[in-house]
Length: 113
Length: 113
Image (cartoon, rainbow over all chains, first blue to last red; front, top):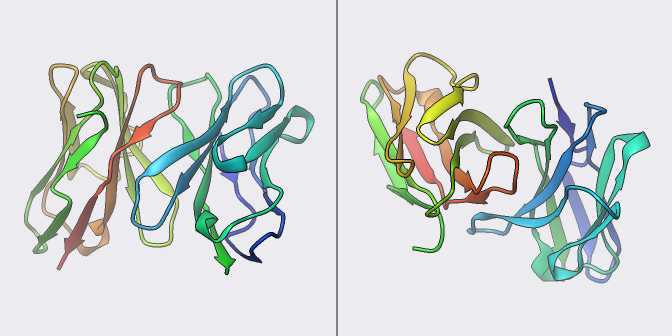
Protein backbone atom coordinates (compact mmCIF):
# COMPACT_ATOMS: atom_id res chain seq x y z
CA UNK A 1 0.00 0.00 0.00
CA UNK A 2 1.04 3.56 -0.63
CA UNK A 3 2.60 5.38 2.28
CA UNK A 4 3.72 8.98 2.69
CA UNK A 5 6.46 10.10 5.05
CA UNK A 6 6.97 13.61 6.29
CA UNK A 7 10.20 13.56 8.21
CA UNK A 8 9.86 16.82 10.11
CA UNK A 9 7.01 16.84 12.59
CA UNK A 10 7.67 20.30 13.96
CA UNK A 11 9.81 23.02 12.41
CA UNK A 12 10.61 26.39 13.97
CA UNK A 13 12.16 29.12 11.83
CA UNK A 14 12.73 32.84 12.01
CA UNK A 15 11.19 35.16 9.45
CA UNK A 16 13.19 35.40 6.21
CA UNK A 17 14.74 31.98 6.71
CA UNK A 18 14.55 29.47 3.88
CA UNK A 19 12.23 26.50 4.21
CA UNK A 20 12.35 22.96 2.96
CA UNK A 21 9.87 20.34 4.18
CA UNK A 22 10.54 16.76 3.20
CA UNK A 23 8.01 14.36 1.69
CA UNK A 24 8.68 10.83 0.47
CA UNK A 25 6.26 8.24 -0.83
CA UNK A 26 6.57 4.52 -1.34
CA UNK A 27 5.06 3.59 -4.72
CA UNK A 28 7.27 3.96 -7.76
CA UNK A 29 4.68 4.20 -10.51
CA UNK A 30 2.75 7.15 -11.89
CA UNK A 31 1.64 9.47 -9.12
CA UNK A 32 -0.26 12.67 -8.50
CA UNK A 33 1.30 14.73 -5.73
CA UNK A 34 -0.14 17.44 -3.52
CA UNK A 35 0.78 19.77 -0.70
CA UNK A 36 -2.04 21.04 1.49
CA UNK A 37 -1.85 23.69 4.19
CA UNK A 38 -4.00 24.27 7.25
CA UNK A 39 -3.65 27.73 8.77
CA UNK A 40 -4.74 28.09 12.40
CA UNK A 41 -8.52 27.94 12.61
CA UNK A 42 -8.98 27.47 8.87
CA UNK A 43 -9.82 24.66 6.44
CA UNK A 44 -7.27 22.51 4.75
CA UNK A 45 -6.51 24.09 1.40
CA UNK A 46 -4.45 23.15 -1.61
CA UNK A 47 -1.01 24.77 -1.80
CA UNK A 48 0.20 23.16 -5.01
CA UNK A 49 -0.09 19.99 -7.07
CA UNK A 50 1.85 17.93 -9.57
CA UNK A 51 0.22 15.71 -12.20
CA UNK A 52 2.72 15.71 -15.05
CA UNK A 53 5.15 17.93 -16.92
CA UNK A 54 7.69 20.24 -15.33
CA UNK A 55 8.74 18.60 -12.07
CA UNK A 56 9.24 22.00 -10.45
CA UNK A 57 5.80 23.20 -9.44
CA UNK A 58 4.91 26.71 -8.34
CA UNK A 59 2.10 27.19 -5.86
CA UNK A 60 0.42 29.99 -3.98
CA UNK A 61 2.17 32.39 -1.61
CA UNK A 62 5.64 31.81 -3.07
CA UNK A 63 5.80 28.09 -2.35
CA UNK A 64 7.24 25.59 -4.78
CA UNK A 65 7.87 21.86 -4.78
CA UNK A 66 10.13 19.61 -6.81
CA UNK A 67 9.16 16.10 -7.89
CA UNK A 68 12.22 13.85 -8.01
CA UNK A 69 11.02 10.49 -9.27
CA UNK A 70 14.29 8.68 -8.58
CA UNK A 71 14.10 9.73 -4.93
CA UNK A 72 10.33 9.23 -4.53
CA UNK A 73 10.28 12.75 -3.16
CA UNK A 74 8.18 15.90 -3.43
CA UNK A 75 9.79 18.40 -1.08
CA UNK A 76 8.19 21.77 -0.39
CA UNK A 77 10.32 24.90 -0.46
CA UNK A 78 10.07 28.63 0.11
CA UNK A 79 13.09 30.93 -0.13
CA UNK A 80 12.00 33.36 2.58
CA UNK A 81 9.25 32.53 5.07
CA UNK A 82 6.90 34.98 6.72
CA UNK A 83 5.18 34.88 10.10
CA UNK A 84 1.91 34.26 8.23
CA UNK A 85 3.28 30.93 6.96
CA UNK A 86 2.76 29.48 10.44
CA UNK A 87 0.53 26.49 9.72
CA UNK A 88 0.43 22.73 9.39
CA UNK A 89 1.55 21.33 6.04
CA UNK A 90 0.44 17.97 4.63
CA UNK A 91 1.94 16.09 1.72
CA UNK A 92 -0.45 13.79 -0.17
CA UNK A 93 -0.13 11.22 -2.96
CA UNK A 94 -2.47 9.43 -5.35
CA UNK A 95 -0.93 6.59 -7.34
CA UNK A 96 -3.74 5.62 -9.77
CA UNK A 97 -4.01 2.09 -8.34
CA UNK A 98 -7.03 3.29 -6.48
CA UNK A 99 -8.93 6.50 -5.92
CA UNK A 100 -7.57 7.35 -2.52
CA UNK A 101 -5.28 10.23 -1.77
CA UNK A 102 -2.95 9.21 1.04
CA UNK A 103 -1.85 11.97 3.40
CA UNK A 104 1.30 12.25 5.44
CA UNK A 105 1.10 12.96 9.17
CA UNK A 106 1.80 16.64 8.65
CA UNK A 107 4.52 19.09 9.63
CA UNK A 108 3.77 21.91 12.03
CA UNK A 109 5.65 25.03 10.96
CA UNK A 110 6.10 27.84 13.46
CA UNK A 111 7.62 31.10 12.24
CA UNK A 112 9.06 33.41 14.86
CA UNK A 113 8.41 37.12 14.19
CA UNK B 1 -22.59 27.74 -1.30
CA UNK B 2 -19.25 27.72 -3.06
CA UNK B 3 -17.40 25.39 -0.72
CA UNK B 4 -17.81 22.15 1.18
CA UNK B 5 -19.95 22.59 4.26
CA UNK B 6 -20.25 20.36 7.29
CA UNK B 7 -22.64 20.28 10.20
CA UNK B 8 -22.62 20.49 13.08
CA UNK B 9 -19.36 22.34 13.59
CA UNK B 10 -19.11 20.97 17.12
CA UNK B 11 -20.78 17.99 18.74
CA UNK B 12 -20.47 16.93 22.35
CA UNK B 13 -22.07 13.61 23.19
CA UNK B 14 -22.09 11.03 25.91
CA UNK B 15 -20.42 7.68 25.54
CA UNK B 16 -22.83 5.15 24.06
CA UNK B 17 -24.94 7.65 22.13
CA UNK B 18 -25.23 7.67 18.33
CA UNK B 19 -24.14 10.71 16.31
CA UNK B 20 -24.73 11.75 12.73
CA UNK B 21 -22.39 14.09 10.88
CA UNK B 22 -23.35 15.77 7.64
CA UNK B 23 -21.36 16.88 4.62
CA UNK B 24 -22.55 18.97 1.68
CA UNK B 25 -19.98 18.78 -1.12
CA UNK B 26 -19.35 21.29 -3.86
CA UNK B 27 -22.09 20.99 -6.47
CA UNK B 28 -21.05 18.73 -9.34
CA UNK B 29 -18.25 17.00 -7.48
CA UNK B 30 -18.61 13.27 -8.02
CA UNK B 31 -16.12 12.11 -5.39
CA UNK B 32 -16.58 12.57 -1.66
CA UNK B 33 -14.22 11.55 1.14
CA UNK B 34 -14.42 11.31 4.91
CA UNK B 35 -11.31 11.60 7.07
CA UNK B 36 -10.66 11.62 10.80
CA UNK B 37 -8.03 13.86 12.37
CA UNK B 38 -7.12 13.13 15.95
CA UNK B 39 -5.28 15.75 17.97
CA UNK B 40 -1.69 15.96 16.76
CA UNK B 41 -2.20 13.27 14.14
CA UNK B 42 -2.43 13.25 10.37
CA UNK B 43 -5.51 12.60 8.29
CA UNK B 44 -6.93 9.10 8.66
CA UNK B 45 -8.92 7.98 5.60
CA UNK B 46 -12.34 6.58 6.50
CA UNK B 47 -14.44 6.11 3.36
CA UNK B 48 -14.72 7.31 -0.23
CA UNK B 49 -17.81 7.74 -2.42
CA UNK B 50 -17.90 7.86 -6.20
CA UNK B 51 -21.42 9.06 -6.94
CA UNK B 52 -23.63 7.32 -4.40
CA UNK B 53 -21.59 4.16 -4.10
CA UNK B 54 -18.68 3.54 -1.78
CA UNK B 55 -15.99 1.52 -3.57
CA UNK B 56 -13.63 1.84 -0.64
CA UNK B 57 -14.80 1.45 2.94
CA UNK B 58 -11.49 0.09 4.12
CA UNK B 59 -10.78 2.92 6.49
CA UNK B 60 -13.87 2.60 8.66
CA UNK B 61 -12.46 1.72 12.11
CA UNK B 62 -15.27 -0.61 13.18
CA UNK B 63 -18.82 -1.68 12.37
CA UNK B 64 -20.03 1.18 14.58
CA UNK B 65 -19.13 3.51 11.71
CA UNK B 66 -21.25 3.78 8.59
CA UNK B 67 -21.79 6.33 5.86
CA UNK B 68 -24.14 6.96 3.02
CA UNK B 69 -24.50 9.41 0.20
CA UNK B 70 -27.70 10.28 -1.61
CA UNK B 71 -28.46 12.15 -4.80
CA UNK B 72 -24.75 12.31 -5.56
CA UNK B 73 -24.73 15.13 -3.06
CA UNK B 74 -25.04 15.16 0.69
CA UNK B 75 -23.35 12.49 2.76
CA UNK B 76 -23.85 11.45 6.36
CA UNK B 77 -21.36 9.68 8.59
CA UNK B 78 -22.99 7.83 11.47
CA UNK B 79 -21.18 6.63 14.55
CA UNK B 80 -23.18 4.28 16.75
CA UNK B 81 -22.52 3.70 20.44
CA UNK B 82 -19.80 6.34 20.52
CA UNK B 83 -16.64 5.70 22.50
CA UNK B 84 -14.16 8.21 23.92
CA UNK B 85 -11.60 7.20 21.32
CA UNK B 86 -13.98 8.47 18.64
CA UNK B 87 -13.25 12.03 19.77
CA UNK B 88 -11.63 13.78 16.82
CA UNK B 89 -12.27 16.25 14.02
CA UNK B 90 -14.13 14.59 11.17
CA UNK B 91 -13.30 16.15 7.82
CA UNK B 92 -15.18 15.84 4.56
CA UNK B 93 -13.67 16.61 1.18
CA UNK B 94 -14.99 16.53 -2.36
CA UNK B 95 -13.34 16.50 -5.75
CA UNK B 96 -14.53 16.80 -9.31
CA UNK B 97 -13.23 13.34 -10.07
CA UNK B 98 -11.59 10.88 -7.75
CA UNK B 99 -7.89 11.45 -8.31
CA UNK B 100 -7.91 15.24 -8.59
CA UNK B 101 -7.37 17.77 -5.83
CA UNK B 102 -9.78 17.65 -2.92
CA UNK B 103 -11.59 20.58 -1.40
CA UNK B 104 -12.09 20.30 2.33
CA UNK B 105 -14.86 21.39 4.62
CA UNK B 106 -14.30 23.01 8.01
CA UNK B 107 -14.80 19.75 9.88
CA UNK B 108 -16.96 18.59 12.75
CA UNK B 109 -15.25 18.47 16.13
CA UNK B 110 -16.68 15.48 18.01
CA UNK B 111 -16.13 15.16 21.73
CA UNK B 112 -17.30 12.00 23.46
CA UNK B 113 -17.55 12.39 27.23
